[in-house]
Image (cartoon, rainbow, N blue to C red; front, side, top):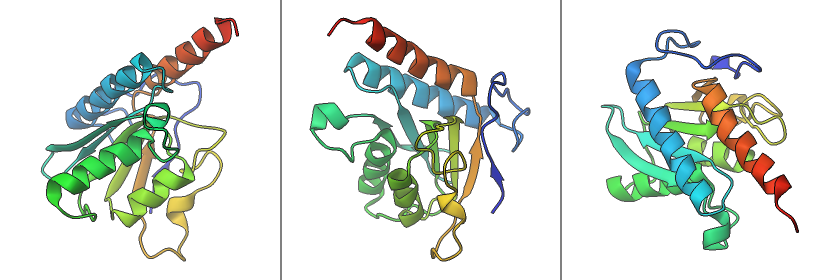
Length: 176
């Protein structure tokens, strides 16, 4: 499947300007994911947000990082959003759905997206440490796996990266 890694150091993608020709619906979904990231930040969590949208464009799942709040290492924003979407539909498979997430997903989250049979994953900021959509590994492209999904990166990359940079800058300033 075609992949579009997030551009590094480039300005945010605007409608029609992304590798997939971002739509207004793409922008709206990523902005909603950014609001979820702000919720995580308010809880002292790493500010990552995610949104699952069905094939008709309806939001079916929202998530923000909750690993600390839930004492659960799997409570990444993507997993929280996928759980909510699956519960809403009564099915762990979400064919035709798209996941929008502010940070490039890690291997665990890409694995969950593949198991959910998502049609598409769209992320904002690249993650050079654990990104599994091209920054470290391209997990979604392994042909040995029984499902692949389209991945696009760089949507509102600057805004998605800024919230993370600001969070970690503040964290480093705090004593202790």
